[in-house]
Amino acid sequence: MKFADINLKELEWAHYYMQVGMYLSGFKKISNAILVYSDIIDDYYWNYATMIDINDKKSLTTLNKVLEDIENFYISMNRNPACYITPQTNPHELPTILNEREYKLAFSDAWMMFKSRKINNKRIRNKDLVIKTVKNLEDLGTFIKVFEISFGDSSEEDPYSGLPPSYKKAIYNSFTNEEYQKEKTVTHYLGILDDKPVGITTLITYKKFGGIYNVGVIPEYRKQGIGSTLSLKAVKDALEKFNEDIVFLQTEYGSYVEKFYKKLGFETVFRGDCYVKS
Image (tube, rainbow, N blue to C red; front, side):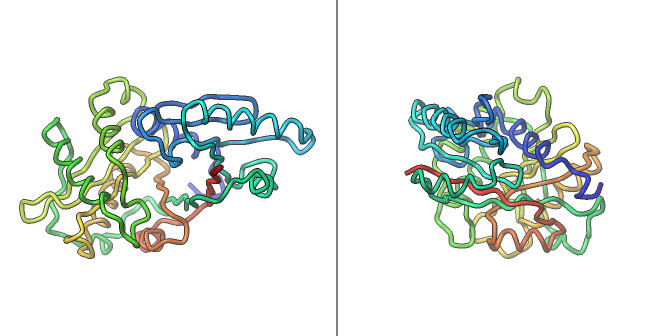
C-alpha cells in the first residue's frame, strides 16, 4: 500500500482504539473534536483534544465554544487542557489561536510507517537475542520490571524516559482485562540475552493496522542492536502472522529515535503537535 492511499484520520483513529484499555481509558465525542483521556495517567501524553475539525465558514464564536468545552472537560478531570494538532486539523491557524489562549507547545510526534512488506535482515543486528512473548503474570512482571528500568531514569536520547509508575499500572490492568483484547490483539515481547531480560516491545493489531509501542532496553545493554531486533520482530509478526497492511509507531519528532527508525525502514508521514494550557 502506498502512503498516498492511506487515510491519515483512519490511522489516527486506529491508534486511539488500540490504546483504549491500556494507556487510554476512553474518549468522548463532542461537537467538532474528540477528547481522549486516561483515568490512570495524568500527563498530557494521554489527555488531549484531537481531530479538531471546525469548518472555516463557521464563526470564531463556534471555535471559542469548542475550546471552552475542551478546557472544562480536562479541568474537571484535574488535567491541564491540551490540544493535539495534525495536518488534518481545522482551522489550520489553530496553533496561533492556542498561543493567544496561553497554550504552549509541549511535544511533537513523528508518526512513522514501515515502508515495505519485507524485512531487511541486515537490520537484525543481534542474532543472539532470544525473543519470547508474555504468556502469564510471571512473564508480565518481568516485562514491567524491564519497562521500569528502561524508562525510569531520565535520558537525553530517550524522550520518554522518566515515566511515572502509573504507566506500569496501566500495562498490568490491560493484561488482566479480558475485554481489552476483544477487537484487537496485544503481544508483549521480552528480549533475553545471556539468560537476562534486557529489552521489551509491544505490538497491537487492529483491523489492517499494527502499532508498535513500549520499545525499551535497559541502559547497560543499549547500542547492541536489541531495540532494532525487537522492533523488527514486531514488524515481521504484524506483516506475516497477523497479515496487517500498515505498521506504524510514534516517537518524538526530530529526535535520535526518529532517525533510528528511519534506518530500520520507517518513514515519517506526518507530524503531531500537542499544545498544553499552563
